[in-house]
Length: 220
Image (cartoon, rainbow, N blue to C red; front, side):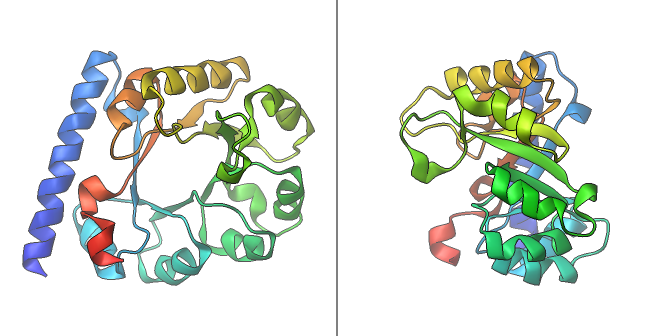
């Protein structure tokens, strides 16, 4: 376990160095950015080690994992759910998640709103930059305004996954513009392969997994 902690410490330091470099390019402060360590498929022992190293923000894509891991970490941990939302899982999500990054349905929003404590969560609208790629989830660019007008949950941010094969700089700049147009102060974008571009474009939350925890193919 000691070797694993040192590996995580080294990886975390490398990512932090990349974050600082990108922020210098953008003349931004480190306090503006939340590093969310994405821990799907990784054991809770890794999360506890990361907690010891100072990490307090963890991201999960599956309710099944988040609901099991969250109770095993200290109460000052902030949990981010960023996977596809399933209606039947919403009551469970409210129990352990603090931020929902992938809201893209008014029907789901209504179900969240009916549950106790749902008003304490932070909500991001997921934006889909790929026309016709409904399987990826997210509200289409042209419908973001109407979605926000119709949604009665307090939406504070926007989230996006850069389309495969696209220029992430272009994608992230587009989302930053959309967020600014709609007064969304938080922007969740950028993963292990493109978070530096996201930070330069204005991301406030980056979701980094494999750069810190290693290859999922070995651990899943």
